[in-house]
Length: 552
Image (tube, helix red, strand yellow):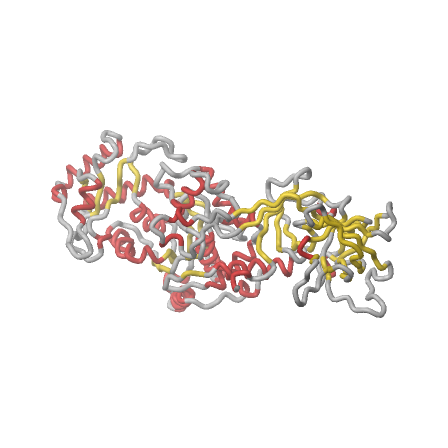
């Protein structure tokens, strides 16, 4: 773990919990939960909630449950549940128990019957459109449904028939009877149940009546003994309903809902509905596309659990929404990989060099450190031969000022190897440089040349022993920093978000590399082996540049 994880930063939620423990509220217990809906893959915004909920539990020797909010069967699946479990585990957290809202369907139904018997809920025949119309606006109070005065006995009968499948979708809903004149629209007789004749991935066809989120969530928290229900700021206006439901039913536990600002990261969208649209319309190659802000996408791109936890700690927990610059996330992974990623050499746009005074058949095995500052990371053997490849940009016929790479008649050191001198430039009929003829100083392997100073150091690979590779270079998925604020976020998709580079060459030591291995390609960027990479076709995803390009 990073330093920031060992010393969590103070925030208002930690202070609330400290005060609760001091006053022995909740009998000195701390119990949290992470309750995603299994209707898509988790994204970086969920990582913030994961780190907070599991972190708070760990810090206070408490518990944290993983609970799937599976009350909307049309969009949910077991596949998404497995992906969510994988992401939470990958981030480094272990849940106390796994629950599902569907575990409580029978109890939720019984609590709804309690509310009906108390005259606090009624079956309404208004359509969804009529309910919206009757609800009123922020400046206009709502109007009571004609069914609001329906007798309790009739409500009980209708609600039972709703469960038994006697009605079609939309025929009836169960609503709480609260206050149609409340200044909080969420308290104007909100829906508690709706009819959905849909197969559920866990309960099958046992139910055609499904509870609403606001009703389900608070009761599920109470059943599980949750003490601190941490959720994002958009649920602040729903807290009175959360408390109302728990107050009106017969249940002993009273969880405390606390809201915090959700993550808003520039050049991304955080709506699962919009992310699903990107996937379904093939604007990206699945939920784990490295351009996606999903945890699966970040993992495939090369981000580490440490970097994401560090990012969540750096941005902190506040009560005010704010846009976070993408440079903050990139800085976290750059810091992690700089310390922990082994080095390798790759040439993205090769330029051929023939070392004329090097023996034709000779191939040396040069020993090079895997990390310049970490002896414990060991060394690797890199073949060196008569014909090598360097980056096209590392040579110039008309060098700009302070150009410290190779020029005609000039010298440069090859990383971990010899000093070479450009003797001749070979061009084609159009004047394009196709090859350099160079000489090498055999006395400069690991040594400075005598009597002269060579300033530049460039990377290289042996032409014959190097391996072909395909490089995927990523840019932000959107051209606008705040795409969700656009009228149509799809109109600001970045057509250059992915560039595929073929013809690159990587050093021979990467022949047996495995998926998700991360490297710093020296002087290029940090790369990760893609999950589709094979020995016969190596594919590397660029995780992040070596420098913060966003500061330009």
